[in-house]
Length: 221
Image (cartoon, rainbow, N blue to C red; front, side, top):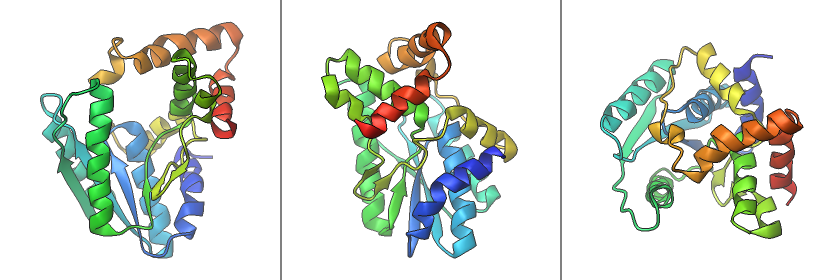
């Protein structure tokens, strides 16, 4: 099965529950671009409006160009409404947490403006596995096994059972060259160390099912 169809199947139940409009948070990376395209295709099939919200954190040189490029590609793929939102990240408790806070403030503003049925976020099975490991490392105990919530109010993460490789393949299928966030290669961040070093080591030593097993704990914890 083509990767785009896998993602379409993941978003379809939520599209069918919708009456009006879906928002999609987009960074320009593979996960969110693949989610946006699949959501657009599914929403058009049932007459639901899809709106992409691109967040420009302004944390790197050229971030506005990245946002503009993502917007141009989404319009080319068929979106009628793509909004770029620049946020000011005030670093108070680490860059990741501060950026997330600024991003969600923008998301909440978009919800107030567009009044969607749901707001899709592009976290994948890999993100879920990483979150479980990070929670255990922080000493969160059984609380870490709760992982990332699939549903939190208007926010829905339809791709928590989809591997990151699938989103990358979906981008290739749709002629999308996703943005590679430099922060995702910076080993000063714990999540990057888990992604680049710890999980590959665990898979090498214990087998390739580690990501799926950890992600499963995230769902049932």
